[in-house]
Length: 424
Image 1: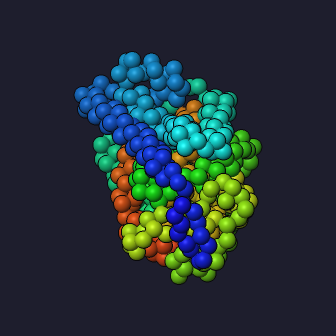
Image 2: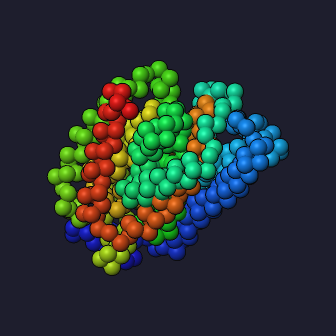
Image 3: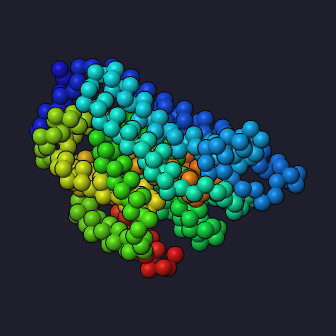
């Protein structure tokens, strides 16, 4: 068995590397296939939408927010229904990725992760078809805007959000919500719905490349998704009881405080002196990633599993409460608590945020908060930006990523505080 070392600690590389590689390619293929199918359906629906609008055959359309309504609209070739189908394919992609991961881990004969992944899938399905149906509303909502200039400029803005989000492990919602509400005067609920879509689009688009390039730690991500999905469900339930303005303020303050350890290690390219937590070895969490900048495979250990798991539950809770991906908190948990390299933290965060968002996406869909005329250009733009970001990250250093991530954290924190105090 071959080994590589980091800070003097040997890390064994498994004997079944071919099977592991097949697992990575299968999961990457599911993500890529879901994204491509979603884009094709959304573009077809958008083209049909603009054609009928130009011909005067579509005035003040409504869009379906239940599966039976989507089916009936699809049979009638209703453009918003077609676009909603494309969005649903995108929203379902992280769920399919989890389901396929069960099969992939079974091929590796890894019973531990078959069990963990099955638990994550059960939590997701319970959230979508249980909690989502309970908290949703059955009546259809109205499309707020549907002009071609609106579609184009939202797409461009979302491409920027997706690019930055892919680099630093966020879903782009920190940019999407202010842009939609302040620039395009979209309602806050519709902006939050589009934010959820942007999170899943960033995750699916970027993670497909990250997994294929072996930048993501699949086992770390899958293990921590138990905490984030559970937290997301709890957050969605609490969102009906708590005042979100207080939560925005608390989240903003916590982010600013949490960023301090990262600032103190801003010049650190790789974590030094990191010892594996005893659970890390049992759960096979240590790994390697190819660093194209230094042209070597970098091995790393994983520390403080309990702290990381607890912080991930909080990240999921925040996601469900506020309708965001909480990628900043995920990256901080992996970089600061678990001491993963920044590239692994951001790519694994991207891998996870789609599943966390999917745990609450069913609720937002059935509330009627995902307007296809807004969410469609957001999804397409974010996918373009996330793809470009995924190609960029392999060519930059961990230090450069940290220098980019710190101001983004400050921006997210200020954004949360502004919402809490009613400035946005």
